[in-house]
Image (cartoon, rainbow, N blue to C red; front, top):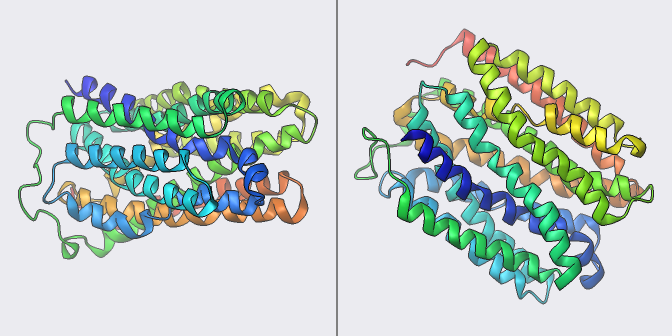
Length: 388
């Protein structure tokens, strides 16, 4: 049963990456239509994450009264609504509002997708399950890299938002109809979670784990947004550049699950993570060698983003099960702060120099910070472990 549930969650969580990628894929169209710079494009990308800074804790508290199924469904409906608003936008202000609505939906859905898997797989193949779940994000992004680019060229940039809106609406319906909680799970019938029950030790571990996850994903977003521009600067067409970069996202779906399996079977998740991050850094450093573009994308997909599930599994090691919903709210608050700040910074670097590789260098620094933060997590947890 739990693997069928995981399949349902993977299928519907694809919505998150598919909707997020819309703005990234049509960024050049928006620059041309609205006369904006890439700093503002980065702000629109980051706007997807802004609501999380304010809503993640509220979403965590909401789990004490409302079932996970309804919270995920609500989030996916908001994602659909935000995409619909973007599809009819006539100004960048409307686009900002649309991305904020999508971001609010992302908060609720991403938090409770993660909690659902933690509830079903706690103590059993958790790194594998989390790896499979989080790979739905690059799967949706890879779909968007190809589909949104083609739709924008063929039917105009608004069609990309329309397609993502429809997909999110279908996902909401599937979750509401078919998701079931594990037999022993609590179901939002009373005040299960309060702030005082989260110990200082848990809080510190959650904050560090959130930093690892935020820095990791921020590096990926920088890659998605600016790696195609590095290739285009060397004469590769925008469609071809998007297709090449999407190779890595497709491979992550399989490499992430494989990395989770290796971590579970060997009991050496840190070694797997550090090895993969070094591979990702190498791919970013080689990106200007556009003759090797396909190989670089393969390397990034096979290694660079493979440890996503290993990182997300830190959440289960940072907090006790009874604190999971509120703890995930705190976790995602930090994640959203990082994800909001980084894209505009990367856009500013590109606008300042006109060289997209300057933004990629920021991605390299973020991946280095992932390894440092993971080491800090392990040191703190070894010194002061969270009680079972």
